[in-house]
Each structure stands twice: as structure tokens, then as C-alpha cells.
Image (cartoon, rainbow, N blue to C red):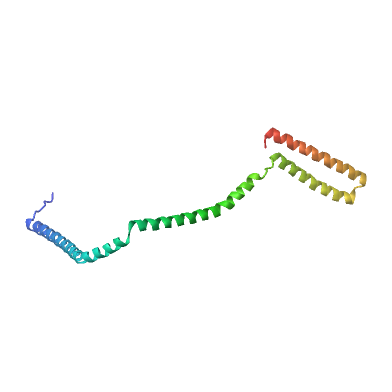
Length: 164
């Protein structure tokens, strides 16, 4: 069973009339606000125009341009001085860094190997001072220098072969 829709024309007409009346009230309120604003403006317009004419006469375009140019020049000079004071020390540091000589990796590796062998030599001399006779100490010193030279040659060879 289907439900039938009942049309009641009186109710529909009453709803549309209520909506229309509400819309008319809103439009009337808007019109009143606009009328009030126009009335306020027309009352205050002469005062506003008087003040504006006084302000415009004070603002001479040439004076304004001159003052603005001076202010901009002062600001530019101040910014340039501040920039130079910050950049100049940095430029000096960069220039001094460019004058430095960089050690090649080969030299650094040779220094490291020599340092390790010198530490070993120091420990060996301390040990020899307590336990070994002078003939054996001479042999250890010669062995140390031979090992150091062989290590340096090995570092040079490996650096060139593997391009460290």
C-alpha cells in the first residue's frame, strides 16, 4: 500500500508568506543601516575634507621625496657599514686559510708510522735498561731503524699502489 501525499494549500501559502515577510524585514533592516551610515557620512564629510586638505598642504611631494631619499641613504650606509664589519674578518680568515700548505696523505702516513715506531723504541729502551746488556741494545737499535725504514717504504708503496 502506497502512502498518498496530501496537499494542503493553506499551509503552504502560510509558510511562503512567513518566509517572504522575514526576508522583507531583513532587507528593511539593511536599508536602515545603509541610510544611517550615509547620514553619518554626510554629517562628518565636511570635517573630514577640512582635515584632509590641511594634511595634503603639509605633504609637499618634493619635501617628502627629499626626506625619504635622505632616510634611505642613511639606512643604506648603515647596512653597508654593518655588512663590511661582519664580512671583513671572514675574508681575512679565508685568505689566511688559502696561504696554508696542505700535507699530502703520504706524509701523514709516514708521520704516523714513525710515531708508532718511536713509541716502540722508547718501550724497548726502557726494557733494555733493566734486562739487556749493551751489545744487545746496539742490535735492537739497528733493528729499530731497519724496521722503521722498511715501514716507510711499505707505506710509500701502498699509497702509490692503492692511491690512499
